[in-house]
Amino acid sequence: MSSFSDTFRLTPPVKFLVPGLYLGTHCSGGSASPSVRGLPPTDAFWRTTIGRPNSRSLRLCPPPAGKAEGNGSIRERQPLVRQNKVGGGQAPDQPESCKPVGFKAKPWHQSVVSYLFMVAGILSSAQVANAQPSRREGGAVQGQAVSRDVREIYDRGLSWLTNNQDENGTWKSTGGEGGGAGGTGLALMAFLASGEDPNFGQYTVPVRKAIQALIRDQSAATGYFGGSMYHHGFATLALAEAYGAVDERNFWPEGVDQKRVRTIGQSLELAVRTSVTSQNKNRDGAWRYSPDGSDADTSVAGAVLMSLLAARNAGIEVPDKNIDLAIKYFTGMTSDNGQVAYAGGMGGMGDSPARTAIACLVYSIAGRKDLKQFKATSNLLKASDSNLVGDHYGEYTAYYKAQALFQADIGSWEKWNKNLIIELKQKQKSDGHFEGNFGPAVATSMSLLALALNFRFLPIYER
Image (cartoon, rainbow, N blue to C red; front, side, top):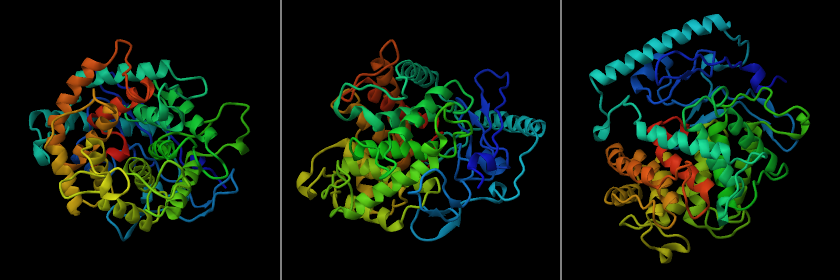
């Protein structure tokens, strides 16, 4: 059986001598996704040029059907079918241009010509956006360049993460849940969200080392990443965002037994299976610290549920009943005023912007903005302009609140985001890291990811 990478050839990106502009093309079969650092593409450009209105990601075509090699515990795979975000119905996951049968990659010189036309279209779109800004809901401007402050904060943070990554691909932590697979996953997402090409850009090495560390540390028997379901959730989310974006040809160093390693897709499927199995055994229909836990809390549940939604977005099979069961758990923990309980039902209620943001975000990504609980949580979030980054678990709050506001109301996010940039610029240390409750690696990763909505490259950040 041919591998995913054999079936779908990547072509190198082309750099153009245009100040501040980098185009990395990751797909050579009619569905290329150009990434422009500092200039998020407009919806109009993607609709007319790429033809995929709901995907600005670097996602490539999913692997062909068949039994995954290298791990006997992977089930026989059926042709991937993407579940619609709003329950019910199915849509084919592969467009015609991505079907593996009979696929032939374009010669490199033909691809270069195509890239030149893409760049012309991007530059034209940028000029139109600058001359006649189009506006989305809430008065947000499409195609608006990312500010210099955001780029500088982000680049300094990634530089620190690169310099402080261990040789084994992980990051040390000085606080509780900060180390392990979850911390590695968060740092990996910070790199992927930057807009730099993960295959040819300047962060290729740390990206690959982080993915290798996650797959290496995952249990081949159970799919569990270890540590806690917090770690498992963030690690699974990171793999879902890397799936299809990272070229896996020659991925592992020489000397590594290829029969003892897994692809990103195989590892992701194992992780999803662990999460679904854990939920099915949980009396609350959600998750707690241990995969065998019988009760649940909204913090752990948010991390795991977001990873399942991202995996489903990537084409991995996730049963609708499990998503619906998790949403039911969150609605039962959300009060009419938008406050969200931690655990133990409404008795654990309290004012927690982080928990409110988590609930608001999962309602949005699951396509359940019709729920009264979504309206309650979004209204409560919009009523507060505080970032709380400097408070207890501030970077954790900012990580979720940025995403929740962006999904709920783009105008409110823009207002909040301006204050966030000012605050993070003041708090960032001279070497690029941030301090936080879970150690500098996690604090830096979460702070950068709170800013990453400005780039909008991660698939999970799509609106």
